[in-house]
Image (tube, rainbow, N blue to C red; front, side):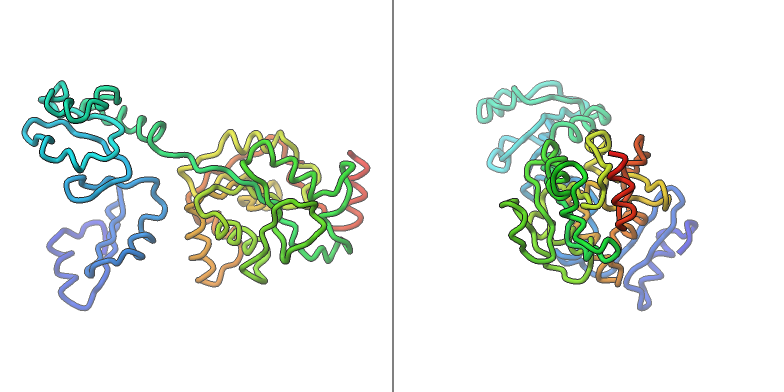
Length: 320
């Protein structure tokens, strides 16, 4: 349907066999679904959102904004007040009722807002209520290194194997760092490994396997064939991390597209990547191009240089 359609036309469209109607309203887009969504379908539709407001009169929320409105006293609903994080006053109320404070004295210590202070409430939610996901590191070493002729993960650019250099590079930014491998190997000196559970998919398989290990953390992913990568680029990436987006990535200087292998993938990326895989796309860059991400311009583009051949290894080694 087009943006000119009204509610009557929308209702008529459901009289036939239509199950779902998409409407372009210019300023926003709307999808109306005739049948009831099940719990798994709701997860799909709400996957990209950071939080959802629900009616506390009917549902128990993880965190609660307590609205003080003298027309709807809360004293009879004290049992439903399980984890209030702020108090919001209606336009006609200015203080918490004494009888409610008697039952819940902790309310007086919470931040307080007027219902009209929408911007302040929004800032409070995004800065104080939302939990920033932990950040874990992943070094991808599972490639076949065909063009190099030897394992790129063990090449020595910095006086140590490249996988070890990459692991140490990630360590200051991450709670834990893992090595992503096609199959478990003994050569990584006790470093935690995540073996591919999604086989034959290259980097996509490594990223998905990491999310299967921990779907609630963000993953800072780098490839092992980036010998010039340093803390300068990682500082930039982590500082500009946007947890409200699916990912934070650099724009590739050569392809003009997002770089998936110097990238922070947020938890919401897990479902998106699986969905792309179900459509037959096993390229993580494809998901970045077509998703809401934080795209950065690197201040050190040379650090995104890949070393894929012996000639490139020698050339880069001589510059270090």
